[in-house]
Image 1 (cartoon, rainbow, N blue to C red):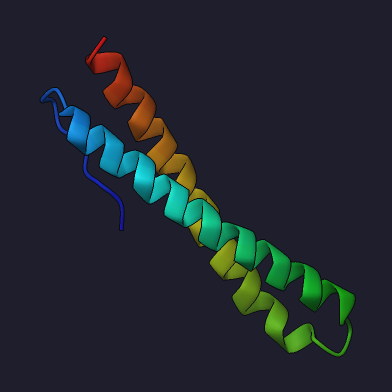
Image 2 (image 1 turned 45 degrees about the vertical axis):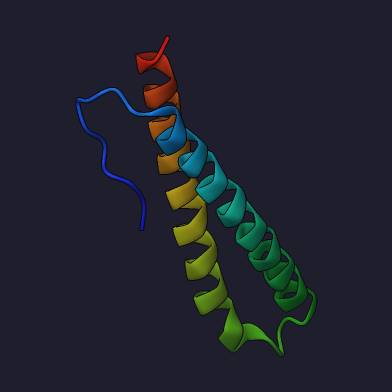
Length: 79
């Protein structure tokens, strides 16, 4: 997942698509956060679900952080 950074100036369409991608991932991240909350409330019975849910949360939030950094870089290039 994610876009690759290039030295070229991004188009406004590319920037809008990146913003849309971040928005979609934020929506998924919100669901994963709620899933983690539910697992935490069910501990210790839900203990076996915790590693997978935590890994999913880490991956999606890491990707969002990378995409936001890319967005800032792209936006700086078009100014």
